[in-house]
Image (cartoon, rainbow, N blue to C red):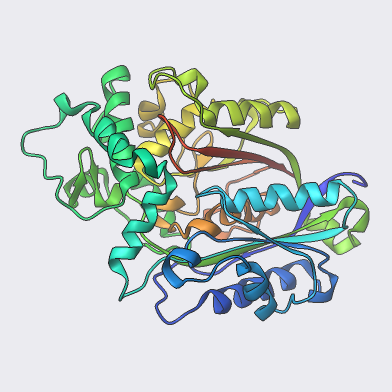
Length: 411
């Protein structure tokens, strides 16, 4: 254990719309809970990474967000680094904290992600904030290009007038291309969403906790074809934190519950044809992570992936090589990714049901895997889980996520 990096403390707040809570409040809650989980005091943290994307745009707070939020949370004097990497900010914070320890700069470090996305008086700004996740110089061109993809399979009766983020249009275009290429159906998308909503009923911290059948998902309000509301992640507030440590710094009690970071793969967007699925950033990042960890996709027990839409889950199942390319829809509909299936995906409810407070999401994925690998996940526990993978993607560039981070954890 001496030279390896472990997670020894992990926590999340409930994900909700919290109009009465501030970034400082959420940071204080989750830092306190993570310290308690690790059996540490605040003065034992030697460095911290703070993940947040929305404060500059929605509150005007920028440049030293982490120093302000984590100072209020009881970490005023340690080196604090601010991380913004779109929806992959949280997993990027974990990656950097681990490398800081690996480089010999500290024995114990912390990654904290907090996001306030919901403001009753700033609705226009809330949705405008999503536009910064792509190249703003060509945003109109990108929107038109994506909306044209698969336009010929959109039913004439489709109602695409609902208020939504730019990214739902992007995901819908990707979904339509996948449908045309591989025969994926709207029912396959609904199966992914129904599974997520069922899993969320087992997680008291999920934003949504209502079980939904495939039929109920399909009958929900249409957002942009082929998505209904139940297939899309909500706007969320919340926080997540993990504490990392060098193996030689662990106490006996910490060692009993420690979860090892086995490998991390990161890939950025590249110019390619949308149908060149083998070169997707998610697949490239997964391949790197698996090679570092020395694991085979067939050995994975539990996965937390970035299901900002139902199609994103199907796409990332394929990128993580849990099933052959093009078969993610059928694989999901078979029940393979549901609790009790061969590889459980998003037992916490995922982004679609647990919620998606952008800067906290990647860290919350890691926290869920830590609970699963410790055997502490309660009603949603994946039996015998020993190897877990988190996939966290963010932004949009060319035809894919701007960045994808894949993290492999084990006990």
